Amino acid sequence: MAQDAGELLFTNGVIHSVDALDSTHSALLVRDGRIAAVGSDAEVRAAASPGAQAVDLGGRTMTPGFIDAHNHMSNAAFEPISVDCSTPPLETLGEVLAAIEAHCRELPDGQWVRGFGFNSWQTREHRNPTRGELDEVAPRNPFFLQESNVHTGYANSLALAAVGIDACTPDPWGGGIERDERGELTGTLFEAATNLLQTASWGAYAAQDWERAIGLIERKAREYLALGITGIGDACVLEDSARLYRMTDEAGRLPLTVQQLQGGDHFFAAPDPRRADFLERVREGDTRLLRGGTMKVFVDRAYPDGPGVHLHHDGCTTHAGVNFYSPREVRELAVQAAELDVDLAIHGMGNCAVDSVSDAYEAVRRATGDDRVLRLEHAFLAEPAQGRRLASLGVDLVSNPGLIHHDGMAFDGWRRGDAGIKVLPLRSMIDAGVRVSFASDHPCGTTSPAEIMWSAVTREFYLGGTVDPEEAVTAREALRAYTINPAHASSRAAEGSLEPGKRANLAVLDRDPLAVPASEIRGLVVEQTYVDGALVHALAE
Image (cartoon, rainbow, N blue to C red; front, side, top):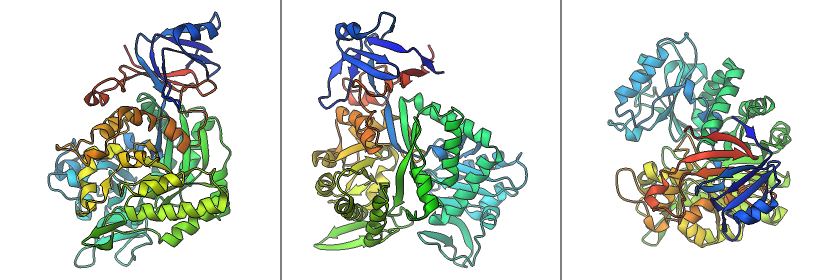
């Protein structure tokens, strides 16, 4: 579906422009894919041509299209041909193993298989499958199961052998290979130790049929459009995924805007901005829908010891968790990239990592000035006082409050009783003046902007109770965090608000998220989505 009416006149609506004044109007005019006017019904009708196609919103709400600035679409797109190991709805490890066995039973020998959606903590047994168990259910195929957070993976013997990991393989930089008491591989790999498995399995899926891979990207993008998402940022694009995006765009099958945050040679590998091939990939020319120009860096790890945090107890400060880089290395890498005119998106989960990123960005501002977009991704565990420094440096925080609902208590455990560290301190960051964007981190969490905004407003945990409820935001702040703020974080000055001259990327909702009770935000339904004035999603009647 892609219906371009040329000139569209929307009237009788509740149109949240998300401009500097948060103004609300009743009518909007689209001409040649751009917003031509916004105001009252009478004002906008006067600006419209006689032949404009009229659309009566019937009191429904229109907002800018949502921008999911931290997403992993190039991974999530392959879910339809992978094994769904999601827990829930699967409850036991036995059910997960049965799903893997059923999927692999009819496949050719040697064909790679990936599993997704698994969360060991949410199985009844509270554990992951062993290499031996995976060997039993996938005896003829290299099999790799990713935890839903993507920071841990589980492999069978064929998969480990295919990438050359055996009992003699040392732990790689930034990763860990788990062994039992006899020194035998358990099949569990942490962080950068999953790199070769991720690259090999993804590459096998894509290279097996590039035309199918293009179709899967398009299909996933259209799922996002149905949620009102008109732009995403893929938060770790590698060489082959960049190729896939380029092929999809050239085929005219990329239906929304994609900003590519370019990673190294593998998912957790260190990028080198001085390498000519990397710079070429980052700087490849933008098209209407495909963007580049940004480098992704991981500062701290999640497993096995949690992210990099400074713990404050009894007047003493101790460090816990593991970082990929020292603060000096982060600073040097960031300055190198900025001096080469590369924007930065740096992953930092714990308060120690937030400090390292802040130090790096202060050095970047000194070296290259104040205009560059500098992003901090996540800040799952931060101190409210850190917000003042982030604000003074003009850092965009791209946060993932949708993860509070299922993972909030896991984050709570990472702070180890330090009451000064908050889980996703969004209220504190906004009050300090930080420009905060919301994003899904999909497939690590739900893709739905409605659910993620609801989670940020309510802070509810799925087993009951709330997680740091004092850090809740308002519905209005949540809407800005999914529209105008990520437009800035994604270098999309022509998007994110409904103002004359901007792209007509629009979402029509069945209710007003700023007027309904907080409990109802989660149930928002996107009835229509427009990209550059073209209708690309309409709810079936």
